[in-house]
Amino acid sequence: MDLKDIKEIEIYDRVEFLSELEKQLVIDPDRSAVVTVEMTQRRLNENTPLENGEKSVDSLISQTNSLLNMARLKDIPVIHIMSALRGVEVAFQEKSKWRQAMKKTGKSISPYGEIPDEFVDVQDGTVEPDFVVDVADTDYIIKTKKTFSCFYQTDLEWMLKTLKKDYIILAGLSSNADILSTAYDASNKYLGVITVKECVDSIYGSDLNAMALQQLGRCQGFVVDLETFEEKLFGKVTV
Image 1: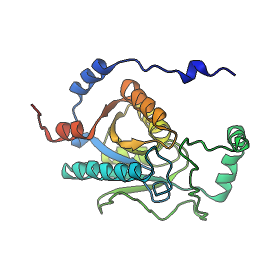
Image 2: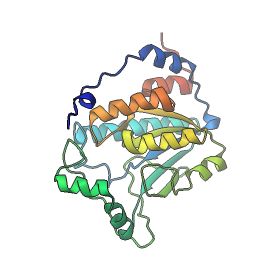
Image 3: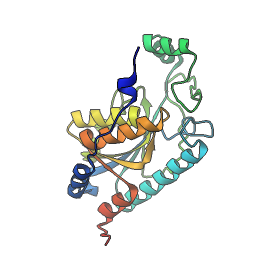
Image 4: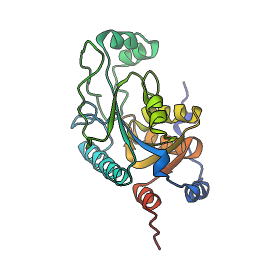
């Protein structure tokens, strides 16, 4: 099979378009909630396959903590979402044709090495929270995520309605999978989406992280860096 047409990808220069979008972004704390995705010790540790290994892990955690601190200063609620699967659920997922094909290749889905097994067999399908980012007493925790999307089979939508929030600010892993899937679902529910560039990464490769940010910024919502987020949130103007 000739994969040349999908291997040699040229990303269109939409910098001007994205800059114009960014100018129009207004972050309203009264309408916003931060959602962290899979930022647990099981998912983010010294064995996590990211481009720069443990350095990437440390950076992601540090930058996300900065984001959370900013949000809390503006009384923006923070919702931490983590997954957990029962043994029977893992077995069900492993039966998919794609997963079976992946196993037969003998290769990792990550170009940086094997993905650590994070399965913990628990009767009620939830795991004791092991977040690597700071969790405040005022934060909320959802630990029933089963697939890529943070909305599917969880009470995230209910929580956002309860808090009267219609904009989510995303951080976590992986940008081209969980983050993108959550952004799609949010868009389908007519919720606004903001992704903070330094606060997401991907175990699937830096190329897919870049393409995910392109997709998120050009189709699903706004993508900003942490500095711009701070300027928008606190009304700072740089000259």
